Every structure is written in structure tokens, then in C-alpha cells.
Length: 336
Image 1 (cartoon, rainbow, N blue to C red):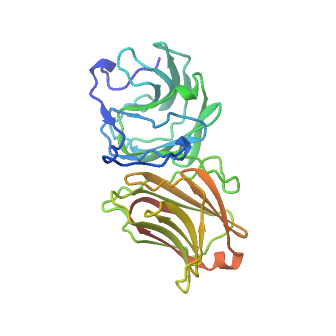
Image 2: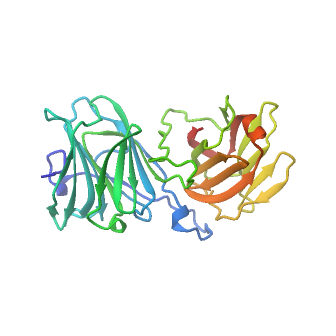
Image 3: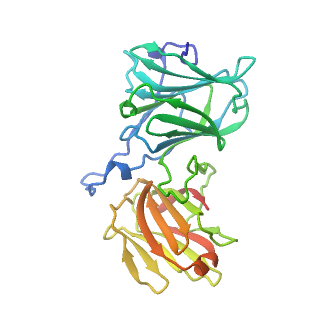
């Protein structure tokens, strides 16, 4: 039967909690659909760690867990809970419990409902190793959760409780957590895979400096996706993502204007094409920009929501050599 790691009763633990960012006095935000709001990542939380999942879980959400397994680890667990009370203990829709101390390390998955564990499922051949770093993706679908470890599919677990009841993440046991991220899946059918691109968050200090230049030595080809993740600074002035060719010209630029709260494509000649979408770039808000390249142009998605396309000929795409990011943001991930 699955039990919490650490040997202490649930009521005796000291938890590390994560709280939502508080808005400035008098700050007014435009109404934004819940599906557009991404929860900021958390870096180096103290374990045991419990946090609210903003908006709860739904199909299409993904949780990224990045960290290291200690050399003396016995086991750890990641619980997707229906609430956060200590007594009575909340239901756990999905309990992910790697165990290293047995002769055959394995993972136990289970559901806790009404204070009782259900039938446990066991997966052998644990891909996690003591002393090694890892990147685990929990991808939530309509009827099951799929889990990949270091880019390889590991297991899937069919829901026994409604996914909509899950609103809390708990991490316990022998684990050093470097980052916890909350994302949406890639909305582009053309660039989709079994798992979205769950590239690690940048943990070095300092992080990527802004303005940031990212080389594209081979240009861009159909199906390629550029990922930019970051946090808007407290007093933002501007934010741009531009693609430049060998002559340092920018055939296309994505620009967020904080003065009038608009998002637009800017051509090489300065022509502006407004993008009809909620403005997401508010102070201390986390964001993810996805650019999918296809024949005839590129598609844009913000926080996992597709926002249309802009045209661009294939020759111009192939001649692009640099991705440049500037403005009032802190970058966590840039990948192409």
C-alpha cells in the first residue's frame, strides 16, 4: 500500500507553500480567460512542498518537474490532490511514487479516495537514478495522465477521480527540486508529438541576459518550433521577439506594447498588423511564446493558445539566422 515518504504522519509535517503574486494597489487587469493564464514556475522549493494549481487541472495541461535524486534517496512522491487540508487528508487523484531502496527500483501509482488507497499499479525498470538529474513531464489528457522521464515515455495512468477536482500539487520525500513549471501543450497539430517540448528551465545565475541573441545557423524549416518562456518585469516598457537574416534585417517582429496593451506583427518596413487576443504581458506574469514555422509563414501561440499566422515566403525563412529578444522580461527558456 502506498504511504507518504519520510516516516512522519501527515499532520506533523512542516510544509513549504507557494502563494499567488499579489497585485499592486489599484491595479486593474483586463478580463483574461483562464486558459490564457499560466502559473509562474517555482525554483528550488523546500520539500515537503505544497502549492495551489491555478485554475485546477484540465485536459491539455502539463506539469514539468526538474531536479536531482539524492545519492541516499529511498523514495519520493508527487501527488495531484483534491484540496490541501491536513485533516481530513484530501483525496489524491494521481500518486506518483518512485522507490529506490528495493532490489528492483520501481514506481508505484495509485489513487487515494475517502482515506483509502485503491488498487496500486507498479511499473518496473525505473528510469530515475540516484545521484542523477531528471526532467519529468506529467501530461494530462481527457482520460489519463502520461508521464515521460528525460524525454522518454514511461507510463500512463487512467483517472479514477475527475481531473476537474484536482487543484493542489504536493511533493514529498527524498528529492531535490530545482524547478516546477505549469504549461499548456503545444496547440499546433503540425508541430505536435506525443509530448510537448518540455525543455528545462534555466537555473544558472545570472539567467539569460536581455537583450538575448539566439543563433539559427541552419535557418528555419517547416515544423520547427521556437519557444520563449519568461516573466514580465515589475515596470515593463517594451517586449519584442524578432527574427533576423544574415544582413541583420528583421523580416518579422512580434511586439508587445505596454502603453496601449496591444500585440502586433511588425514588418521589415515598419508596417503593423494587430493581433486580436487578450493582452497577457502584465507585470510579474509568466508567459510562453511559441512560433511554429510552416510553408508560407509562421503561426503564433501564447500560453498554449493559438492566435493565427503571419505570411512569409520559404526563401526568407531559410535565410533567417538569429532570434533576438529584448525588453522588460526575465527569460527562463529559449529554444529552437
